[in-house]
Image: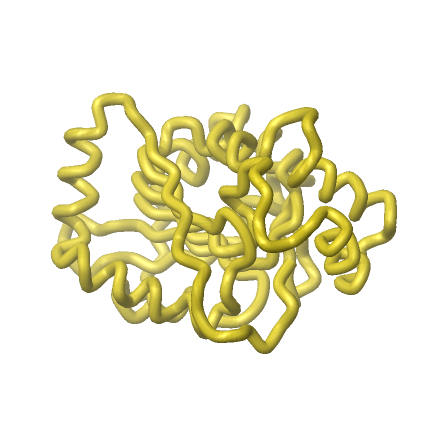
Amino acid sequence: MSVALLLGLFLVVADAHAARLEVCAFSFHGPAEIQVFKERLPAEVRPDLRCDVVVYSAEFAGSFFGANGKALSLADMEEASCQARCDALLHHPREVFLLGCNTLATRAQDTRTAAQYLQVLLDHGFDRATAERVVGTRYGPLGPSFRESLRRIFMDVPRLYGFSSVAPAGEHTAPLLERYFRAKGDYRRYLEQGTATADGTRSCWPLPSTGPAWSRTPV
């Protein structure tokens, strides 16, 4: 069931050039972040799908979730990462964008205390046991951090992008993505050069989370 959910949640947008870039996008709520990729890379679904870039646009608290009512847990993703039919989504991509709070968080202290984070989760409808488990993963001393778990899930991906703490709302993340694409220029060439020179190393880059006061309480 978990693998079927993983394979069923994404849409595909592709570069219009002859040799296409496949961008697989998992959208759990608003369209603002995904729209940037759609505008840059016109949509076309292909049966021989292999994802060059993967985008998760969602809330995150140990699982990806959002307004559409679906959720995808790290446990489900770890299970899927061991199955060959998910390689195109989890191991083949050259870049992965994890656009939710704490996706690349370590156990380092941030602007919120553990008690404050617990209250945020409870306010978002988490039951106390689940909320305490998520807080323990974020701030506690035991087990892998969110960053470690997602690096393991995407073990062959050279570059992961995400947030090490609170993330801005989607309408504010979209301009960050636009600036990112403008800075890279020829994105295809950037990906190909990055793949050619990666030499087995991998990077995790937290996106900047500074900006105006957001209108929603981020998870």
